Length: 287
Image (cartoon, rainbow, N blue to C red; front, side, top):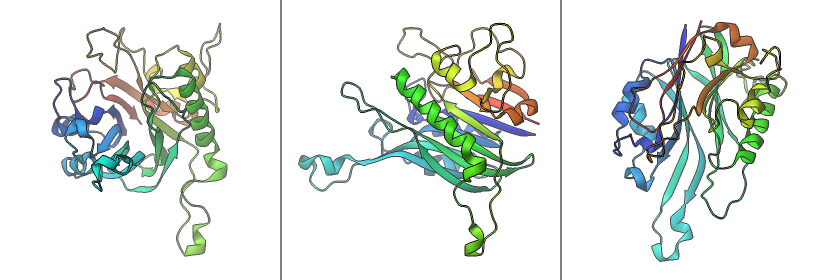
């Protein structure tokens, strides 16, 4: 059995507006593999805390990799700041009870914006040899304000993920350096904040549009939403709580598995009690 969880941790800021890495770690500590999004270093809103170091200290039984999708020194862009470094990193993490054999940071397509901030987004890939065999896991974060950009990002992500068996991962031909060749598994898991709701155009882009008579089928070229494989989700399930008071709560966070893993999904749920972010942890069990 392999327990998975994905959690957008919103810079470590909980529903009460306070920083609390301890409650984030407590919410995910029981998982074997953890995917986190909105993990930062030196971000002003959370007091500049190094979330990578903090979360690793709180989860000592997990290995980790971090992928900074965006790394920028605002100090270098502000002459009035002199030589002060104002370096801000924003990205995704993967943590695992088992060694992470290799990793890559897959940068996703983006658009230049003028009226709203648009941060570079990415999918952090980790190759992990689990009790179920070697598998690929991705911590994914898509754009939150532009549907066209999300669709573009999903197309790019699927192209890269499905091409892995013929392209290989972080390295191929490792024998030239005297090292063993890494496994090249076909099966994968995509976990993260996709900023889309079930039934929207982006969701159909990810899973394939449902057939009028037969619904969504399990096919090799579309990831499968794990939440529809372990029984129907409770009515009104949400993974993001709108703290503005507008009541626009939604299901934005998912675990998608390759078609070859669909039969291994035995359970899924959303932890509605976790309060370490405006998102909720989404759990999946593979057997």
